[in-house]
Image (tube, rainbow, N blue to C red):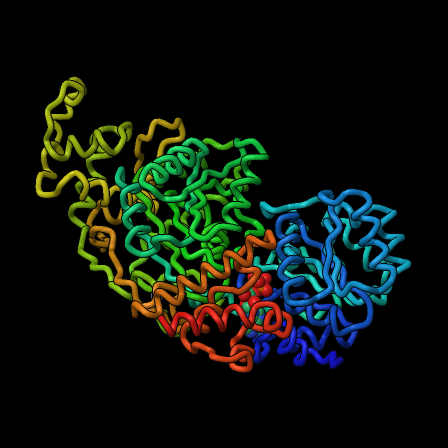
Length: 605
Ligand code: ADP
Ligand code: ZN
């Protein structure tokens, strides 16, 4: 057998070429050196350790934090004919014993192990008696104590280096920031590792952020119906209550939507996660408890009904869309209330001042991204220190450039109204005063007699809300610490209030509806032609049938991209089928006949 990496890529995985920097990472491990790989989700990290594990003598040990993820990866490898297994708490002791024997007999290319199991003295002894080709530490950012995925067991992984100094190690993560990178290097003892940093751009994801208010749910339903009917997606909400409510509401509209949050029974959570992975077109409505290790490649959209707390969180959550490289949407709706709630949560939190300052800074950056009128991708990448020379052409601001208007005068009115009413009131009250409403409360406070009373009749209440939101988002107004939503002037507003500085704001439009167009990488579905569409459906059905029979998710049989290529090329024979990207030798033998048959039958209809 030919064990060259490129040969393995073609014969086992059915791909023609390595992506940058896969070949170099693999060469590093082949030479017995350590590597640290920072690559965005969907970049192709797995092959970086799978191929050298197969090409080198012995078994590659993969440390992976999530059991569901392990099972998926092992199922996918088995489908491709790779000798892979896992050791974790779901196995009986007899099953575990059998796998240990396979390891000792040198019958495994890859063994996935949960970190807490790996660190047991017993497991380390076992490894010492086996031949190990490499250690791969997946989701390596779990060593970072400051990140939200921190796993204490990960810290102990430096032991591997001490016990097995001659075995090369590779650590991988999709977390981009510099402090995390430094922490990975020091905690895992990777000072001598070659570091590979890829661009963190995800060109297939289309970023869209729109204003919304009470009708956010309807806007979401409309978005899914128009652009993602029957496709899988994730909807993020801030609270458990909202998750339950939105999931139930979407389900009542006939969508297969399921809730997921830490308040649900763990059995329910597992069942929902498994349906999301195994069925096509399930929408998971979730808090941020759902996410890490969601390996499903064909999540077609990630929707946010609330604002994430930071750009890092936004990038990570939206990054779960489109791992397969086909076009996907990151869609978000946010409004005035989000801005107020997040600002309040931050101010009233228990953390110390230094911590708060950092959090405030992060939230400001996130709000800045929302209110931006230029390319979102450029700003997003710039946040991670990456320069994108040209606007991307695949975000809402590039596709339908927002109008801006000189809002200096209305902003002065809005700010002045805060000042005149004593900085003690919330947005609704302020707008009532601006619009000259005479209710009992306004009269009682005598605010029907102040200079700002009734000076805002030229704009509608929603327009005023938009102005207040942007003033808060830009830090010209602050939200009170007591938590009643009262607004205060901040120092930053003086220049605008005095008319020394003009203020250009985004014109509030109806949420932009973007016509579904294919991106450069092509869309998975629906195909435009009726014939293509029906072949696509037929192949999906066949794939689902084959997957169900084996109890694995459909994408483990073939990815959407592979099916799409079958539709485009319509291979008529096994030798033509073998050329489809994603068809390796084992899958050709296992599925070739049936898929070629389905394509022929379809042509004959
Ligand atoms: P990551 O772990 O970085 O999120 P994966 O390893 O899951 O990414 O790879 C993402 C997708 O890209 C998978 O569908 C994988 O099969 C595909 N892929 C990886 N490398 C290649 C390649 N060289 N050619 C074609 N497809 C690839
Ligand atoms: Zn853009």
